[in-house]
Image 1 (cartoon, rainbow, N blue to C red):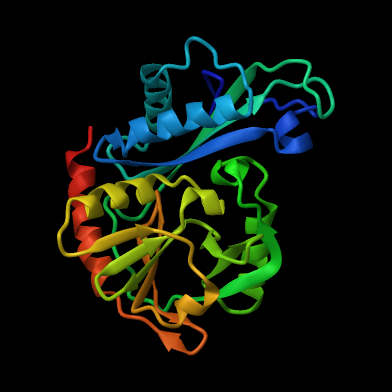
Image 2 (tube, rainbow, N blue to C red; image 1 turned 90 degrees about the vertical axis):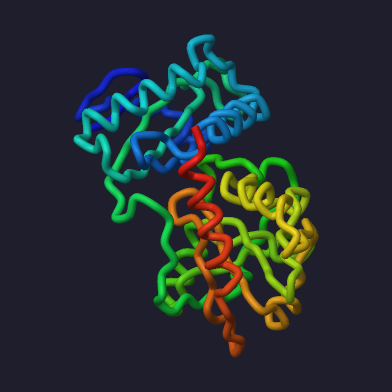
Length: 280
């Protein structure tokens, strides 16, 4: 079942001139539904609106937080997922017309949903090995911080990881700093200091990244730094972990010959789950 621009259907009709397919001219949000609510919904909504404005899309008047929340919950109900943990993808695409220069800056959307295994974030105890992906580099600019439909670096990096037996890869930007993972933001722990790349390095403006920054800002036990991470720092770190909206926190257990602890990731995961329960 798909919510296609407000209509629930099993057979959405996409035009062959769809600009999302032509040019990746689209933005999207990946959301977690749990406990009868969309987790951190307001943060997702405002990021989506900001992304649309940056891409000079015309935002329809009806695209309020309440409108989208109601439409996504209608989708959840239609898919038989009410009360179950679920993953939702909401994609907004510029209307067809034009070549690189659009003739219509209006938009439409569609949303999909699927069931998840866990109603809350849990840490996996499976090995999780990563490697640097060096075939292509992220631009250290504003567009790289958005969730657009142009994710070829993430696609080719995921293929590289699978072919070489890695669970994930870390992406470098054009300054050769480590910017993020294929599917989330990166945090590095050294002693009581926790580092995460700044948005100016081209990393995703992640929702869970934002939540952890807020959590760490209230704790005396850790010092947070938003600073560039060089590849040389990876093997000196005590911990590495990756964050995203679906998995929460994913500890890295190995990078090359270095193995990592997971104590800080476990500590922060409990605090993140507590914040999820309290969030509207």
